[in-house]
Image (cartoon, rainbow, N blue to C red; front, side, top):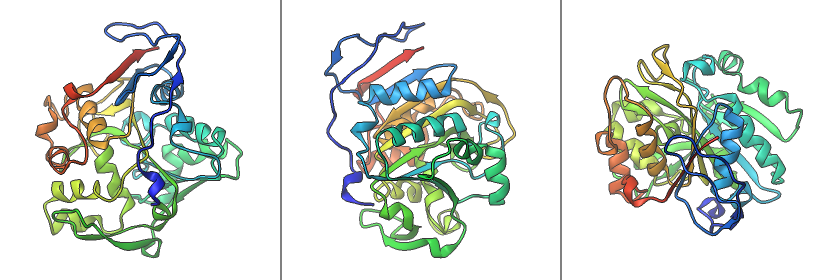
Amino acid sequence: MKDKITRRDFIKSAVGAVVAINSFSAIKTEANNEKFDLAVVKSSSPETGTIKAIEIMGGIGNYIKSGDVVIIKPNMAFPNPPIWGSTTNPEVVIAVVKLCLDAGAKSIIIADHPMARPDQCLQRTGIAEACKNLGSDKVKVSMQIEQRAYTEVRLEKAKALEKTEVLKLLLKADVFINIPVAKSHSATSVSFGIKNLMGLIWDRAYLHQNIDLHQGIADLCTFIKPSLIVMDGTNALITKGPEGPGTTIKPNAIIVGTDQVSVDSYTLSLSSWNGRSLSPSDIRHISLANEMKMGEMNLDKLNIKKIEI
């Protein structure tokens, strides 16, 4: 990843007025100089919610410029439909892709390292078909299943995962956008944005078998740093994750930010997970990343904009 992947200065943006519902506040009609750490939008339309949340965070132009190569990492590791909540909703992915195209991205590569047969994952998640329907030769969906697609890097700030093989395409990209789905997980309680980074490395088994799993996941944050995180909370798999099928609810939420720890911490508040109400301190990879100063898990310290449309 190039240096330009790091968080950029916030750009002022005018945001259209919308009516708030329940405890969600309305966006002002005038240009707003306020900077937000997180944008949380609840909408029955995943595309509308995604576009509005990114708009609140300054717009896609705050993160992408014309000519950029963009890597997008959804969760499409399982051959399941999005309604199960174990894979990222294609409507969320497509909303981001369209914004990237509008911003003048040179190419957009949607990549993952699947846990099942790539062809089945591409078909059943619906992401490949949705991208094909865009009709743009700038957009490519790619399952990274060969080791030669990865290269070894050293994680200088890591505590357990000193080195790993990372997707080469990620290292060459100008912008990395993480689009995880909100779901439970049998080994880590939840699988959100930070956990989604494991789909960008070759040897995931090493983290499970050779080191403390949570520390290894937190260590990934020291090297893989998204320009933007778009959390898909439209369908949330709250039991029997990461694959399902299990209990799925519909928070209809999109959470956008640049801090992986903050996005994951807020996502916990969408539901109970495997029957437990969890705080960020209950999830070790989140709290470890916070301790390593990879982000902020204390939501009281954040300026969060919440709306419902």
